[in-house]
Image (cartoon, rainbow, N blue to C red):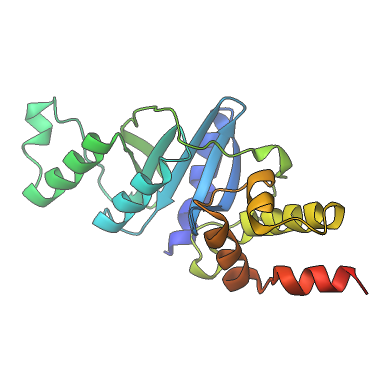
Length: 216
């Protein structure tokens, strides 16, 4: 089993809850495995093959732009992650309890994908919060071919749409500065430099070269 194999059952789960699902969404110079979106509520989900400190950190980072964040990973036998249930929580190994505690402190939910039948078990709900900067998904089109959890795909879906939006804005405003483009084009970056740096490294896009091509 690979990380990307977790995506189909998770996508089915969120779609049954009424969400639209997009894979590999760029957020603050990195890719979120997938997001579940309703008009007034956005959820980020980070997948890993194990319940690691890294996946918790990734989910925590996503909370700046999403109402909720979850970690998801496969298990053969699910565990309850409720610190208030002393009979189950304190019976867990110490290191597992520590990870659960970190998730609870950060308001991160825990989803276990039970193997081999890919049953979804939400062992701890996330805590909804108001995001710092909410993403506009109206420009996105859901695809049945989307895949999540592939390292080489990080940011591809969102990067494509953001780059197309940048190009469209520059075509209409060829004298626009980087700061103006950053402020006018929907994106998840902390500043103009990080946005164009990501476009350069992910997509090979040069604003100067693109502006020069418009003058031909």
